[in-house]
Length: 268
Image (cartoon, rainbow, N blue to C red; front, side, top):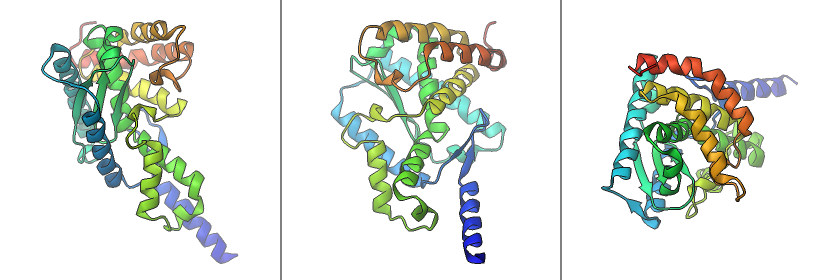
């Protein structure tokens, strides 16, 4: 009984140690996977995806994607530095790409590997709308949602073996490839609705810190809903909160977002 009790305490201690707190939203999540391995695999998958797609460079839209992405990245780095957590982003290697595709989509791999599809640009309309999208996607990476999803899959598949340290590198890699299908569109990754809601909130704050008007979020999401009305729902919206819930949450988060926006020099 004492041994069982000690094992239980050890497992509990490991789970507590693996809990990560989001410094912007305060949400805690279980992240058991090795971040360095995730970043390596993400970089490989990103390179493969870009090589198979039609990368747009040198155009005004491509430059906008890079500019908006860099402003959000810089805002995130300043914030993390201000709270003494710069180390969280130390291994990030940011990239921002525009891909030719009619899909209404965008995504960010762990480590800051971002892709925006041309199909979503008519819906974003301007830099503020683009910042809503990119802030949301960057937030998935910063919040460690990929690690969280991999950890959930590992716990479901291997259970207690993880706590005993009996999982091989090949098994970790296998789960990663199921969460981020190699040779497939990275957008197939499904986040939970709680993660999507967190990315909405965190993204709203990040775009505001970067000097983009967070009030653009509501009209953007309304345009997204209208653009997908009557058609197969795009992957970008497949696991997101309902439109009414999202708008309600954004309205709740707007006062704080506007404080960040004002501090960044935004016009009220």
